[in-house]
Picture (tube, rainbow, N blue to C red):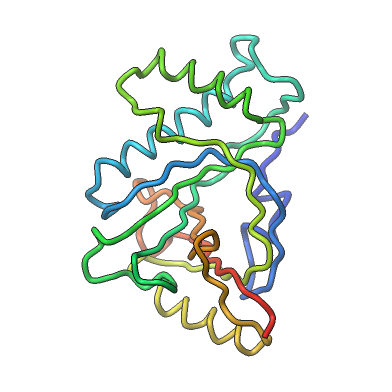
Length: 212
């Protein structure tokens, strides 16, 4: 059986060819909340280690014969981030001082992952990497709902021009942004900045919306 790759089976969610309105269904995630500049924050680096550590613990469970019920072969989905600041309505244009960022970093999980699988994965990772603060991570099922999104190609610092494009599209289609305490500026990272030239990075920028 081929591995399930959500970027390919759900292209409308991960590879929009143009700005689009989309309804995002409920999904399972591992998530870590934090604050600070992602370029320099030790909390952000640890969040990455925790999320990828847990995600690959689940993915590789078959190798030890401990795969959860319903397990299937899959590609670990891309890293995602919800971003905001203390000022309401943050739309993705970075503050002058990036230490003001508040964030939730997430990695989607296959539907067979539940609270029990999450607890098992944490226990396994804690034995392998006891230095990680696994009390920071949580499991959630989250339905993002009605959104507008667009694919940004290039450095993260160049996102404002793409956000302008998304905002113009949203208004033209008769929608307005709907930022709340649970609906944030959302980015999905399709490229690895450690291995990809900045001009070739691909990032889905997604905003919650409502009909005017």
